[in-house]
Length: 501
Ligand code: ADP
Image (cartoon, rainbow, N blue to C red):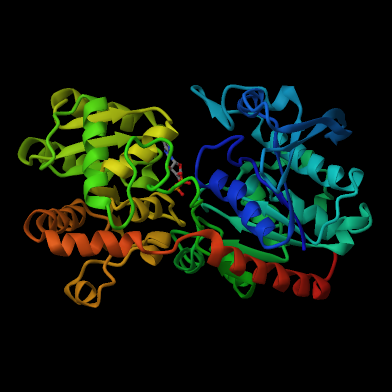
């Protein structure tokens, strides 16, 4: 199959969250299975910097040059093609410095960029034009999140504009319902679509233009990133107002858990780790990683103290309110070490900073984005906390399982699908991989953490079993890529029968 993906971020070019991991890794897995894959993303400043440091990659500048009409203004797009060393995937960067040569991807310290609607309308329109201009073979156009939600609309409504529209099916993946690309109604003019689609059944949402809704309404097939989240988003609150549209299209909505990039996230070969380990050597390996983490962060080197790791965006979704309600008590009363890595909302950074200032011997806080440190925390931590309010899939708990950092998670979305609670029965059956709690309440998180700490200190053999069960799980892309291929086939079938508008 010929698959073209469109995403606002993809590793290794640009990343703010799990979307980048998926858009950068899934195409490689599909290519390994003999499919032809390419990925379009904006040519951000950070992506260009990355390329300058990659001398081994093949860079074809301006393989196409286009003009996109944005509300009557002709704006140029230059399409560059990149092949990274040993990669089977072509990346196409859509270049327009006015839109993408900026410090952040979606915003900066002053907040979201005010022209995000124009930036991603432009991107979506440049992608569909570029596919035509470059005459790319294509069976599937796979779009990710609101930033590309317009593409399924062009595909379905402008059938005669481009020859490839008739040959292919569109698939839309929803990574997080909370981010919908909702803009004021008059921005409809930027889409270039007929105003009749500014209607509650298609693109309009309470007077606003909603780009995620657009993708959901027009795509031939929909996926989201875990089966539980696929169910949750069909009702409030997880549907975030779009539950009606989603349940109306439930027969074409599939939940597929994201895979992890096992080459990058492998404690046996991870280049960011000073000590490597596998399922047989994890005790010594993790002890050595814990020591070097403590050392490098200035924490007391105490092997016997449980080390709790947290990595995640500083956003309400990740459960920081619960963590903050508990942490004061924990740092006052329990001999634990906390290593926290997160960037995002200032209010959480400030509150965490207060705690870190009070007990620098117990709390190490880094409010930056650091890939190496994320790896080293997974390797050095005994427990990994992820008490999310909601979690479409979650990748960190999967990395934790692989690195033997036992996850403590709330039972929501992908966390519910990937972590098995250490109940007595699950321990006996040898399937327990972590500690799971239900209610979004501090006492529920406290109980789960205490359960975990009790097993850690009082039942080391049970702890070993939980660690090794987690480490032996297969959360690679192998299963998920096969499931995605099934969805592509299904989408092609649906596209043949779908009425073009
Ligand atoms: P989300 O996509 O909602 O942010 P996921 O768990 O799916 O959450 O993916 C988050 C990804 O971003 C993981 O790869 C995680 O390691 C990484 N990440 C998040 N915050 C940071 C940070 N401050 N530094 C390094 N990596 C981070």
